[in-house]
Length: 303
Image 1 (spheres, rainbow, N blue to C red):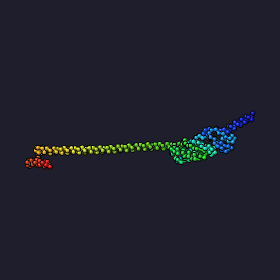
Image 2: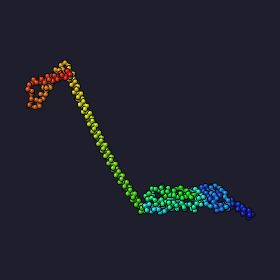
Image 3: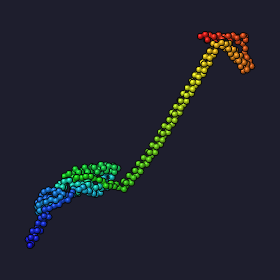
Image 4: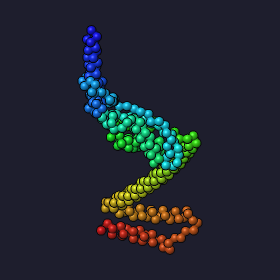
């Protein structure tokens, strides 16, 4: 009875030791008699009892680890406290088991030393604006070393950069001075633009006034030209009418009468304008003047 029970218990123990169920996203390292034998993939697997054993168990998921706060010195000799977080993933369980004793400790230590080195390359002002560059440099440096450990460094992120209180006060004063500087510059730019706009407006006003004066003079000149042209045309028409009337019957006698009337009219005006009047020595000259004028008119008509 006891032997049957012992055999049954032994069978149960053997089955338990030989059957291994590996969860998803996990990997088991199997050693046979102390030597690496293989990697168990997710699912149910059978091993040799008493000869094989599960030496290491690794998670294949992405894992995040805190990088503890440390003091770094920037290129301009300012001490800052920096901490971060690193994301790892086991890609080769065999190397992760035998390549290094503790890959998490190794990666975190390497991240700290690399961070101190990268911070020491830049000034304090640039540590806040070049976080992405620092993160990329840390990932590249750690990933190169972690290849032999079976670990892939996915990314690194700086969480906090904390300068001393005195440095923070100085930075705040610097920012205040920078804001005041920008304010003064903007105000001067506004005044400059205002002066430019006023000068431009004055220039356009002067140009428009000169254009208006130019158009006024042109219009006035054109008006005077048209007026002179109209007077000339009217004079030409009147002369033409006079010439035509001379050709008609009695026209010449009418012209003689008109010349005599004008002659007498002008003597009358001279007598009214002055108490002294100079008369021709021979009043018969009036008839001579009229005859001379009529001869000129005849000659013009004969042409």
